[in-house]
Image (cartoon, rainbow, N blue to C red):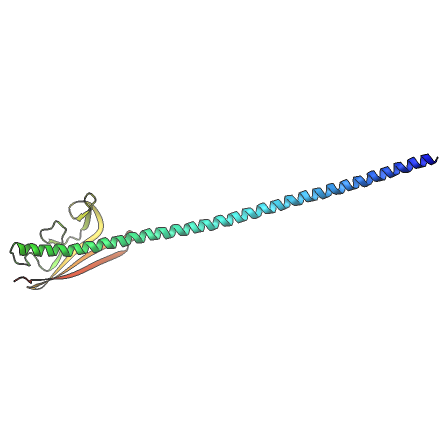
Length: 201
């Protein structure tokens, strides 16, 4: 009888131990499931943060690149304007030199120093042997020799006018004016002035 009781108690103890063990296992499994679901949620949150940070970074980079492109474009356009102004300045100086050459040619050929000069507006280029009436033509650029003239080449944005004023029998006032229009529609004008005198006896 006692043995039966002892065996019954052992069975009860074994069942109780098994019950406790199953409870612990279920608790561990529950905690594992909670941990797993929590880790998934944290990973999803982390992925969401990474996407937002990536979008912000890309936006900053795009804005920076657009700013650099805008500055570069503006710089290129300004360089073109400055280059055109330099060319206009040299063309105006060339107009003065051509007039001087015409005066020197008169003196070398023992002609009146101001022969061929009169009040008015004229055109000249490096091939000119005399003053031509102003026709408001654009100067041509010949890429084969890098010369500006009215004979050969492609049209440019430069218009040169030589204004002559006979101040007296011994003085000529010369204004070499070059007008240019930039690609953006800007209007510029270079006006160089010089005076020539009959200083030879």
